[in-house]
Image (cartoon, rainbow, N blue to C red; front, side, top):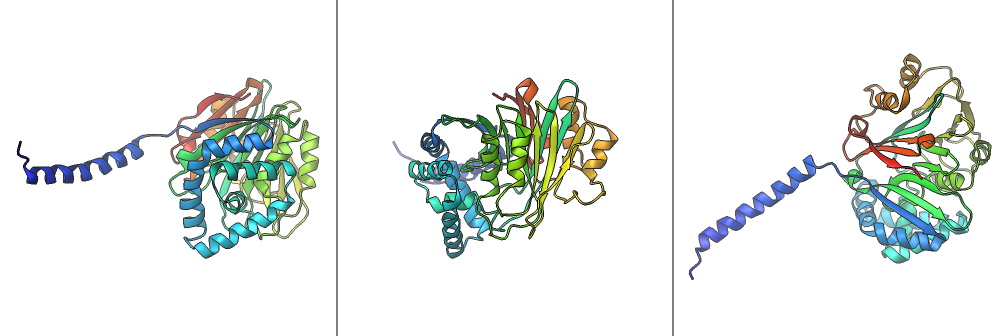
Length: 354
């Protein structure tokens, strides 16, 4: 049997053009769903499971986002920051140190890289924006957050995760939203109805003992009431400036806590009326309204659908919104929009909370 070499060459060339085009079309049209993972047991076991299940995606984030983007592709800068981040882990509680070691061992990832991936904000290497809203109604209590960030080197939609943690040492069960390799949390809620969200307020300066992502998770895992969580936030160790929204679905309380750069004092702004919102502005010492406040005062959201509308308003939502989450503790539900940008304009998927 004779083969026409010219036709074979043309066929190969066509495939080389056609296959990449199909892949590009797939990525443009397909909206990835967030992955879900459940971690149970002691810190070592939870870390081992997390390392096994998310190791590949974590390596992608570290290589293409943390190293190539945050560290501008510099091996020297990346290594220096990894070392600094690793040195800081000695201040973490034993549970988090053990979990981090287990993740590193099971995934084969440098522990310094994992430490830096969870603390690059605290080191002052990036700044992003967010919006959070808490709404209290007669039959519902909703805690929500828009994460307005970059697209994590194109990996945001493919690495967004719902992480369910069931510690066996007496800490509260939690559900958090984050990304592969993230030990801490951007948004987290525990089995008692305590929810917390993080908004950035300026840049960190590297003077921290506990990364803010990890602080959120630690406080949520160890607080059974609003007052317990409140006291822990107010006693936070020195670190980066932040805006933290705290709410309790059972007591109906909510507050926004603000720490500005260079200041050790943490200001509290309590919910008045049916709702409270926060952006990336320090508002505790100012009577000035944000555009989010204006939206909330104009029409308080009515239920989940009303809150979705507020979160997707043009003057509230940023074009860089990579996920939007709503915790509805009383209905034991979680709503998460992700996989497309801006996420809040897209579809919210509903999940069971606990």
